[in-house]
Image (cartoon, rainbow, N blue to C red; front, side, top):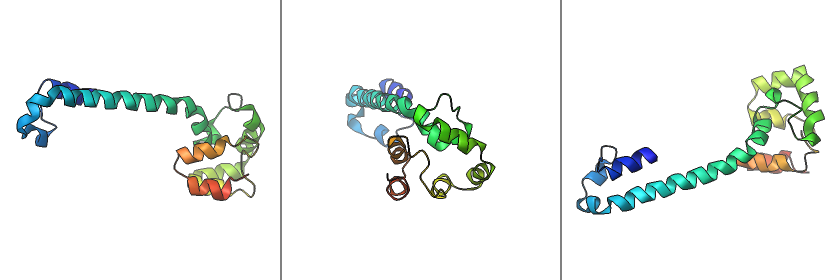
Length: 135
């Protein structure tokens, strides 16, 4: 975004072919540049929220590579059990993530106070959440 904003500010429209053909483009350079700067700021703000939950997202996405000592206390024992289970390790490496979690007869991380449902929604799996992780 910053790259494009600078290019527009410098009146370089190489990556904006349609914009380069418009007569009023030069008059609106500051407006376009500010819009891109604002969009960049919004992305940064949004991504900072994602960074705050990144560790929990990683716990759901890559449970076998997570350190149980840094995991939330309420899931540490389940995480250790999962990481010690050869069959589950094989399933994890051979199945899609949603199928891996669906293969459990009882929900994994069920003592987690519901945080796992929020993260599945973040990962785009709301149907999975309602069917397999409902408490």
